[in-house]
Image (cartoon, rainbow, N blue to C red; front, side, top):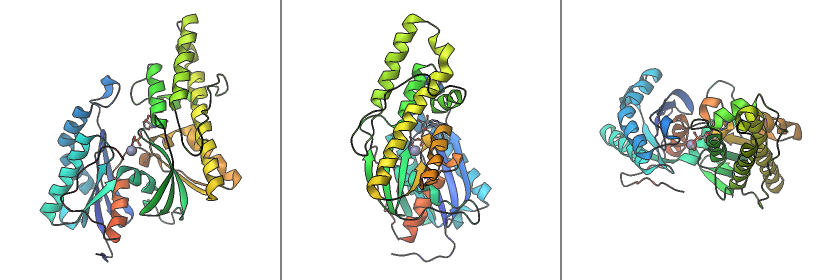
Length: 340
Ligand code: KG4
Ligand code: ZN
């Protein structure tokens, strides 16, 4: 089945974790992208899955109404319903899955299940302005989020190959767990980023992991920070407070050095000199600065606009658009999956 409509309106739904988001796209162009960040989790130091699914239930209809309103689109004009079907929290995914199915049945429109990681990597193909330049194929994609750290060859909109993966924590977890040790609220990545901007990245040394090939591991960096803090606090109770900016800058430098090392290796191994970054950690200012510097080494770097780095439905809609063009639609039997 191949659809040939000239003007396709795609609705995207994202509920994989703790953000309720709905976007409307006209072909590849973004008309609206509404994200409701749940704050019920703040005092628990992490996402509470049961709270997340309940908050999605409460918020999803107002978020839909707001997205339609901002796009000046009526529900009856939507051509297809795309939604995140995994990986993520099962309860949260079930809300998006059921809501999408309900809409598809009520409107008599196709249903398109989207992989959350695929959505992050295709966020670079969302049209936001005229004369925008898009990555070409094949290119490399570094996905650095709260749940995943992967290097992927993107052969085409719908064809990709994972060539590197984390063996334990994701880059976002390395930030969030370190932030927790230093007393920051969840998610702590942006707090580390903020303090690091005022600190000396060479003040303290943390070991860059020696993991073979294109894989990652962040548990060693995290443990070295834990012991470093423990030893120094024994000598000085106020060690964290007195050195917070330098600790954050030094720890962050170690993570960024590791990411750069791996992407350079991927470029060398594949011969592909075009790299896109995606996922929440690609909002990090040092990640952005250091990767942009790689352009001096003849590696073309695409950084997503900050509002597309963390979870959003626009990226779900863009995968929905390309799957729709290819006639890749799902039936009502499609079930969510928590893990890849
Ligand atoms: O992509 P995302 O919204 O969620 C997943 O799909 O996992 O990424 C969330 C992650 C969190 O770990 C958060 O701390 C991290 O992205 N993050 C950052 C920054 N902004 C978000 N990490 C470092 N620096 C930032 N500025
Ligand atoms: Zn994500």
